[in-house]
Amino acid sequence: MASLPCIVLSPPTGLAIDAEGRLDEGISQMKVWIDQDLCTGDGLCEEIAPDVFTLLDDGLAYVKEGDTVFATAKGNAQGAEGLANFDDKRLDAVVESAEECPGECIFIEA
Ligand code: SF4
Image 1 (cartoon, protein in one colour):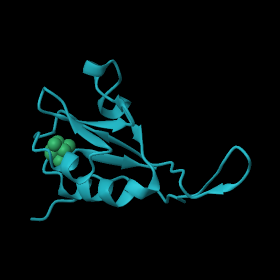
Image 2 (cartoon, helix red, strand yellow):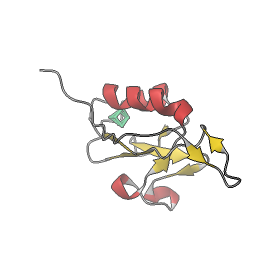
Image 3 (cartoon, protein in one colour):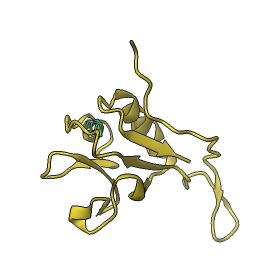
Image 4 (tube, helix red, strand yellow):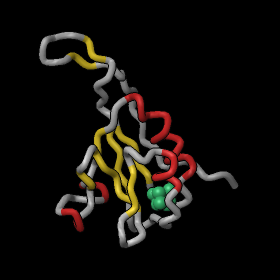
């Protein structure tokens, strides 16, 4: 039986207004997190979207935003408390990661 990807999507606009009031299509409200309790550590997410996902020495995947890795081992919240923002350019890769994730533990929120 096919499993459903762990994706929570409310309608994203993909659009935002910057500080000067200009329409900025590069700003996203999308966030992603991983439930490490379900992660198998196969690394598919990191292969598909290395800008957003990374595996640490414990063999589990974590989300990241720039140089910030959302893992307690890195001094940051993880799991549902450790959400990373990502921009629209990475949406397809993040969704593909969630769809391919064998642990069904990648959650996308708008
Ligand atoms: S694809 Fe899913 S199960 Fe595999 S490492 Fe990434 S989060 Fe973990």
